[in-house]
Amino acid sequence: NAGVTQTPKFRILKIGQSMTLQCTQDMNHNYMYWYRQDPGMGLKLIYYSVGAGITDKGEVPNGYNVSRSTTEDFPLRLELAAPSQTSVYFCASSFPGGDGVEETQYFGPGTRLLVL
Amino acid sequence: AQSVTQPDIHITVSEGASLELRCNYSYGATPYLFWYVQSPGQGLQLLLKYFSGDTLVQGIKGFEAEFKRSQSSFNLRKPSVHWSDAAEYFCAVGPYNTDKLIFGTGTRLQVFP
Image 1 (spheres, rainbow over the protein chains, first blue to last red):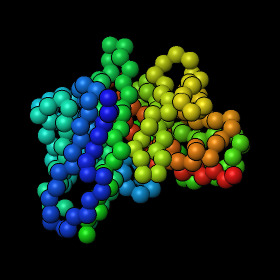
Image 2: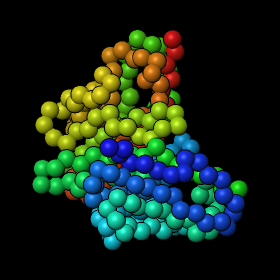
Image 3: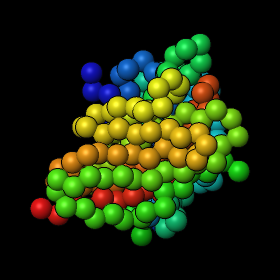
Image 4: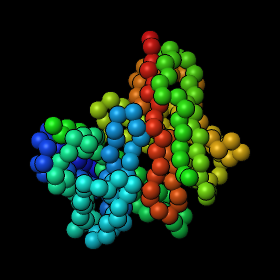
């Protein structure tokens, strides 16, 4: 299987434009996540989802929206791009922990976004 | 507050030398600990994880890490570094049945021939 895939790999946006970052996983994972990684920083959680139809905010949700209509897909939407959203975005997925099931997050290759 | 500290921003070693990357955490419950590696332009790859049991954990690519509860540490080690190990390494801590991993700021490893 392909694991976690993300498109596009790189994108330049003008201030105020909108775009959707795509994320797909073929591991039948319930949980999916979006992170952003800024230079010299660790990953910050933007949004996550514990299953189709269920999403919740992470640490830095402002300026973003998500939806989860299927188990496989978890798109991230930027409505009005701002320079502060210049970052590398990573999608990840996992099974839920609990009941003796170990949980490990598997990451996609990332989308590099530049907002000018 | 829950946090992960990686004190070394940048480490340089010679190929064949031993390596230790430090990770300290602050966490209110039983921690679940991870090390990820990120090669240039790539996503994060899981190196190893600690959930319970033996505190010395073996991972991929010859890496190991030791959980020391008394020191709140989970340091990553490798006895002999290869040039291909040059990458950024992230330590992360999380709870068991939710999914909010807390990442450190990373340590960039440079390997000289």
